[in-house]
Length: 168
Image (tube, rainbow, N blue to C red):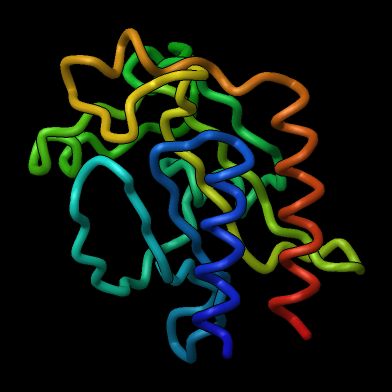
């Protein structure tokens, strides 16, 4: 079951990286639109998210779009303080609507066995050890830490294996 597999991939990635939240996008080809990102899944321990599957254009302005176009992994320590020359930006409207605060992020391409990007794994707010199960906008600055190199390497390996599983 494809949806069970996607749910398991995102859940395990979040568990292994201690991420409060995450989302998963798959690349798709749509007649008359071309290649797009299909927003498939979102999970968050701290707030309730009502997922509405959406089709997003692939542009360098969004984090997932940038990773889909470049194949680069984005490691973001503070999503509200991006480098001035960054081509991408976060969409703050969801944080504002839900009363959440996105701080650390890891956005990884899911690449199959021949090097094609088939999806994007996005992890949000890596919790420090001992952090509470549920985060609030008030405690996120103290409880959220950057993604370290070891976690990034582990998530890259998981994303690659996940891509092969999704294709199969």
